[in-house]
Image (cartoon, rainbow, N blue to C red; front, side, top):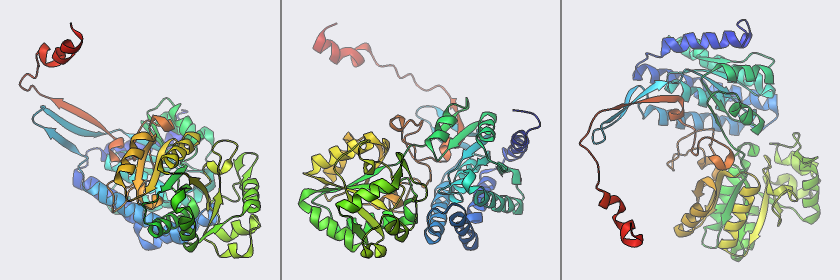
Amino acid sequence: MSPSSPVADLVARARAAQAAFAEATQEETDEAVTALAWSLYRPEHARELAEMAVAETGLGNVADKIVKKQRKTFGTLRDLLRVRSVGVIEEDAAKGIVKIAKPVGVVAAITPATNPGATPVNKAMMALKGRNAIVIAPSPMAWTTTARAVALMRAELARIGRPADLVQVLPQPVGREATNELMRSVDLVVATGSQANVRQAYSSGVPAIGVGVGNVPVIVDETADIDDAARKIAASKTFDNATSCSSENAVIIVDAVYERTIAALRRAGGYLADAGEAGRIRQRLWRDGKLDRDLVARDAAVLARRFELRPEALAARFFLVPAEAVGRQEPLSGEKLSLVLAVYRARDFDHAADLARRLLAHQGRGHSVGIHTADRGRARRLAETVEAVRVLVNQAHTFGNGGAFDNGLNFTLSMGCGTWGGNSISENLSWRHFVNITHLVTPIPEDRPSEEDLFGAYWARHGR
């Protein structure tokens, strides 16, 4: 890093701000976190940033982005205010261990165009909960929106007397060279967005946390509440025009309830494409094997016209496209980032579970899967056999996967996918990933079992 480069100057200011904030009390830390939350949750700010994001990127829609910004920020603040992150955070007298949380230092956050306001604030809240400073490297196509979100956070920090340089953004133009320089200059990198960014973060030589690709399959079995499942799938699929990595990409319907479920999905706003229309969707949603960026996260009416669907499709909220194959030969079996939902017909639950596993093996391994069922045993079997970090039962996936008020996952906009997805974490990103922990270890009464205790059963079975 050149001593006089813009990136070097940002990091130097971040280190000075973090040093001043490192001695903050829990109350002072939580006040700073709340300030960041309010900078986005404030209704006029949430609307302003939503409007900016749609105008700048063309992705999603304003109404849902407002909801996303406020809901995720509110839920994350709830989670953060309920935990200690300063000093002693855990004490186990029986083991003689005391855990003491300490900052990691300066964090680089790589953020995507799909959430240019919500993701930077979400990561900044978690970073400051650990008494760190953060520098945001936004998607170049969303720099203006992210820079405005950072300006609002800085203003709110200044209002409470905290260093504004605790939160900064890379200046324009945000290119790969500046982003790589930033990643090499900090103490922790947290990357959300393209897999190219995630891989670059892991190769930066700095500890890094990345997320995997989404391609969520959701099973509907014969015991499900069909109308409830259809309403939830529709609400989740259409939210913010399917920009979320947690959006359903395929619905797998057990044969016994296939027709009923399709009818329920159509009542919920789905349009069922015929064979000819399905062919055009395949041809036009992908160009040279890649998603057409002009069709990603667009309004349903835009897609209906571009796909040349029947006139009634103009009133649809999303599009159901039957599919059978899984793999490179069937683009519908991958992530679509659009209001297109692949539909698979399964013979029974076991076949449905196998399809879900195959879809994830093709793309989205480690991310998540959903099931609508009244049989909790089936949900458990699915969870025991699928390579996914999250298995959601009877939930709208987009609203539950990154934390919800009616499930126990913590709120986040970054979902780890474990080694299955090439990630270093297999859980939702949280404040715990933004702290170092010192373990104070004191003597306890000796806990040494006998040889017989440990080897006795083995000796009895196999001999010494």
